Image (cartoon, rainbow, N blue to C red):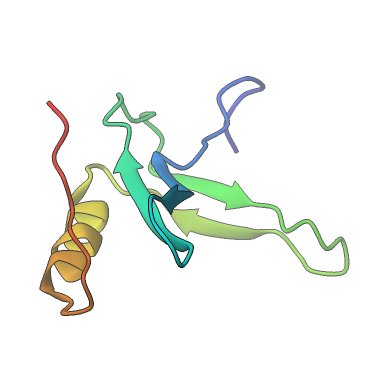
Length: 86
């Protein structure tokens, strides 16, 4: 388990945003914060439901899982348009 103050937050963020026009439509803004990953190789996941036991999970060493998610989103044919911010 990481030391106090070294917990992990997801580098992904999702936000539902209203789009201009009528009828009201919405889009989903998705992004990733490419920050330095913590060095531990595994972590303990503690569910909010205290009736469930904590579980150990392997920690990814890079952003490849997230990159595959964005590749999946790009491959969808439902009007999804990932935009790279530079």
